[in-house]
Length: 262
Image (cartoon, rainbow, N blue to C red):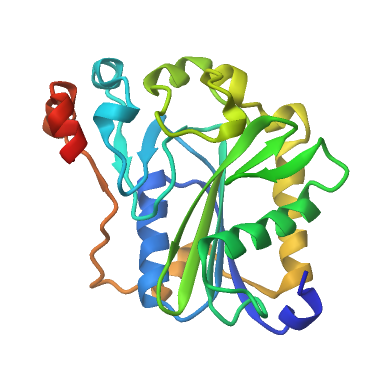
């Protein structure tokens, strides 16, 4: 870890409670593209169950579209890569948005950034469970509890994580078994593959430990959530968006050739 070298670097910390995930992603994209500051965003839950797909995800391959439409589940295509997740009130979101100089000697490529975040969260989960960064997931043993996505620009990077502190088993029915999955998944279904963080630590303790770990790496400056607007570019138009019902209906009837070309 490069804590002694990095602590002079200021990290702005913003904490939310129940911010809608679409709004959170719009804020993140705005800060990544238009801000020159380093940011950590912690959002403790989002009110309504929502599916969030990566920028290149195909709904026809990833979602059980009939129940998604039947239950009126919002589907978001975010601005970063990575997989598909169902988020809700039991999800805790942590996002790091950094300039390339924020972490000393960190190479601006996906794997080094992922490795560094694994070391960061190793501090958070020290002595708790059998924590590992496994492929691109955070796991206890061989069960996933944290899904990650990243994006890298010329001078900045973002790494955001959906931590499954808890989840509703019924929501897993909205996801298909992905064709491309980590090797360690071993074709396990969702309920055999993931675990709940609440079985390992209290929710508030996880958030407090994350903030504490942040303070060992950076000089943390708290920004009130209602003061964040002054840092946002009001003219910025985010690419993260909700998929329309028409798009989902079209995906439900897409042919294999159309899926391959999408």
